[in-house]
Image (cartoon, rainbow, N blue to C red; front, side, top):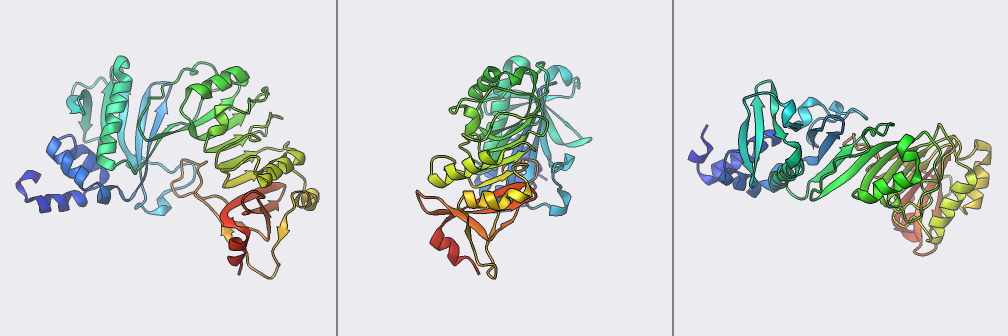
Length: 374
């Protein structure tokens, strides 16, 4: 089918009904077709949840996923939310791509080698080490043209090794891209100077998954680590420093069995006073106290009570912590207990269960919140 033979309105209708991968492949054909795709951008990109760059430091390979909200939910499960069907491109080092059938395309002024094959639906792009960043930048700008600025873009490095072998990473400076990282606190990174230097040299993280395996000195309150939007910290193996006291982001999940109830009370009271955690919307802290101390904790944080015969509202927000799952939300928090922030009368639902503490912050004053109670 030769698209250019059809009237403009017919071309536009065809574009509007093409899938995302075909649109990307079509964008290589000509500037005019790319302009047509861009003119239909609102319709073609409305179902896109995000585009995810998953980069492997070991071999320099990057798999690019497009997460489509219109796909059936049953296809997705936590920790395995992506399949080969979600891949829209792979980007490899040129010396690893030995196929002679590569063709070059001009991608926004940069000539890039691509390979297309019947064995897979998506294109494979290649780069030389010396022009690696420019290749990634050009491809990303193509995605911005085809799928739009409103789409969520994430750069993910999900499994930093314990060894120092992969300490140096490649994090290109791409427009509208959030940085997500999984890291083991071990070896090189257990030295607080190396840990601080790493985050000071990186973009502000959207999500940090931190597996704590070794003791480390406390972080500076001004550490860029605390600027992350969300953190998931596993401290089960060791009594670690407090990684959340100075947190300035939106979501905290802290898993461990040695988090003292005095630290928990301090966190809540600092939120109540307006001293800290101004941006917090959800926190989940496990292993903070035994069940028999729960009433003591609720008393010390000044929790208020909703009548047991009334039904409180359910607090839930989209989770930023689990970046693998396109529809994962925070734990549905239904509690008859709540606290109020002194500075702006903002309400947070609080709940304790099995030694875990949950807090869900509402965008409501106490008066507005109580109107939601049935």
